Length: 506
Image (spheres, rainbow, N blue to C red):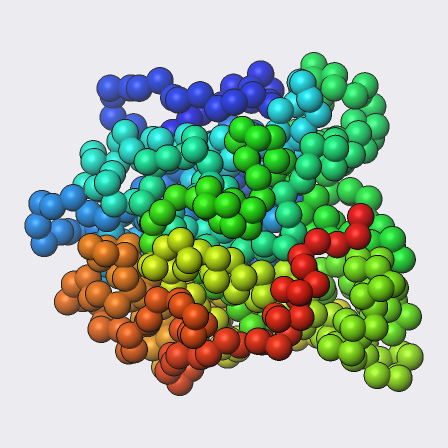
C-alpha cells in the first residue's frame, strides 16, 4: 500500500508528506522495494529490491472474522541499526499473525542511513526516518478503520533499532495519542542517540567523500543514490586503540530537542514518557552478531585490553577485567568473552535499569529474557570459522512478527527456492513459538495490557502467568522445553554496570 510516496531526488532530506488520496481501485500484487541500503544481514532479512521511492506500508488483516468488532492493531518497526532493513522481508510478513490472533498487523519502511539521519544544521535537520515512522502512525489513526482495525487500541513494537525508535515515540510529545501500548525488543540502550556535534562529524566525513561542501544540500541531492550508499557503507572504522561504540550505530537519531527530545533513560528518570503498558526484554547472546561483524578475525588479549581502555578509560580497566577475565593466553580468541561483556553492557543491564525505572512510573511493565539456542542456523550468517548457534538479537522478533505458530512459518507463505529453506522448528521450538505469540498478542488485545489474557480460542492458553516487573526483578524466561520465571539474571554484572554507568569516554 502506497502511504506517503516520494518524489525521489526532489524529496531527499525533506520531511515526509501525506500522500494525496485516490478513488480508483489499486491492484497490489507484489511488495514495494525497501529504502536504499547495503544489507549485510542474513538473507531472510534483506530486500529483493531497493529504491528511493520506498515509503510504503503493508496491512495484514484476517481473512475471516468472528464478529464485526474493530480489531486491535499491532504496528511493527523493523530493526537494522538504522542503516538496513525491509518491512516486506519474508520474516516480517503477517498473514499468519493476523489470522491466528485476530489482530491487524502493520509494517512499513522508513528512510535509512544518511538519507534518513543526515544532520548538519540548518540544511540537514536529521531524524527524517523518525518523521517517516510518525507519519505512518498518523496514517494508522486516520485509515486503519477501513481495514477493520481499532485506532484506539494500537500497540507499537520494534526490534533493535526499531525498539530504539519505539523509545523515541514513547518520550516524544509529537507522537502523543498515536499508540497505546509499547513493546521494545533488544533495545541497545547504552548506545545513546547522538548529540548534534557528534552527528555533524559523520556528515562532515560524508560530505568530504561525496565532494560536496559542508551543508551544500543541492550538491548532495544531485548525487546518484548508489554513490550515497557506497559512501555510507565505507564509514571510517577506528582501530581498537581508538574505538567508540558509536561505530555500531553510525547513523542513529540525533537529539534535536524536537523530534528526539532526550535520551530514553533521561526521559524515564524525569517522568517524561507516556504512561501505558510496556513490555521489554533482551536475549542471552545479543552482542554476538555485532562483535563478529566488526571483528572478522581473532580478538587477542592485547586488543581486548586496548578496547576496554579506549571505551571506559584506565581507571575502570582493572574492575572490568576482574569481571570479564581474559586469562593469560596471548593468542586465544576473545570474541566470545567480548560478546558476553557487550551483551551485558549494551542490552541486558541497561534494559534491566530501564525496567526498574519504568515500573516506578507504570505498574504494567513486563520484562522477558530470551535464551533458547536455535536448532538451525538459517537466520545467522556464519562468521569466519564460527557457527553461531544463537539467533542472538532478532530471535524474538521472528517468533511473533512472522507469526511463527507452526513449524516452517516462513516457508508456509514463501516459494520453496527462497533463502528460508531449511527453517525447521523442533516440536519444543514450536511450543515456544506459540507461547511467545500468545504473550505478545494477549498484551496487545487485553483490556488492561497484560500478556496473560487469552484473546481467543484459536490461541493456546499461556503456559505460565507473567507477573509485572517489580522489586523482585522477575523476568519471563523464554526458552525450551517450557517458559519459566527467572529472578534477576546477571544481577552481579548489572549491579557493577549500574554503578559504573552507561557512558563511555569520548
